[in-house]
Image (cartoon, rainbow, N blue to C red; front, top):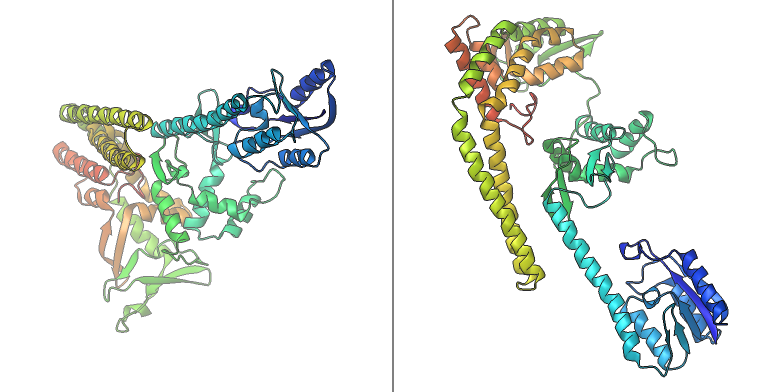
Length: 511
């Protein structure tokens, strides 16, 4: 008989313990030499056999059908076939004497043998693949439910193989934040972002620019905001987010055409915060002879204020005077902090009790999820009912987790440090504004001021960001009771505007 040696190994998990192609070939050559078998060809294939369509396997079949070979030597039957299509073809050729022998390291199969034994081995190989797929998917679902990512970490993260977690890639994570900043805040397109990143040091493995499609994938992946998307379902991840959820949502709106930002050639730090008290129109700005001038747009066509131009240094003095009035001295801030710290000890009991109740309910939901999965795997309920109940439990779980976060935020001790930081930030706002460049001035304005209404080159009305309005009106030399009232009002604003992860940011959380 003219034998073909067929060796196969894939990178799939079911082949991790199988001999390498070279090892299979060497063992089968020794077996052929020991039994004086005639080898006419050797085929080596690196591909999974769970689906039909293997090119090397098909070439081997063509060689057998042409009569150039009539026997196969392989390590095991599961190396030859693991799907019913290829298995049926092998069995048919064996029964019709096109194949006179299939020999493995352990046994041989001939046309006159009982085909049942070979069919069982082929069926076992096929069923192993099916079971493996089910087990892998079940394991992945459990990992996702625990907030773990079961795949390769996306760009900006690394797989910590020792702890089986996802950690931030300190070398590349900065580029992810930069992509969102360029796209959302600076209104750059994918091609421009690719050029910016290349100039800032990001390279592909070949040393070139990052492709535009990769930029789009980064902007479309909710993983960077702490949420994992798998098979159409969202899961809360345990990994550290690289961007706030609000920034990710804004990027999606821009990509979907809901937002149409226009790039600004000139940057004016006060534009958008000033209005005309006479007609209510916004003040616009222009650059003349190296200086910035602000003036009324006269959008209603009946305002005389638009003829009056305000130079930037005059307006900077106006803003600085406002910021000076939200300044509490650092010794007073420390006294308020210590007094609030003593008061917080009396308010924690109720919140802690509610937290325990919610956490108990959350654990109960997790138990229900586990039981529901066991029931589904035991085929006691249909898939559509399982999906419906899973969705209901997930929604209820997300709701409980949100309430737990809210209660944790409401703990008085939880907001002590952020409030203190806010008062300190306000005490340093004037200096930061006057000494900063245009971009720093803009940042300070965004943090503290909503709108300034001007008339006759003076402030007619003003509106500050919530807690700073309270600080502005509060007596700086008031009693401790009055100062604690200011502190409590600031705390209320923080609890109302807390961002997703519970961190305070003056430009997002407070508003």
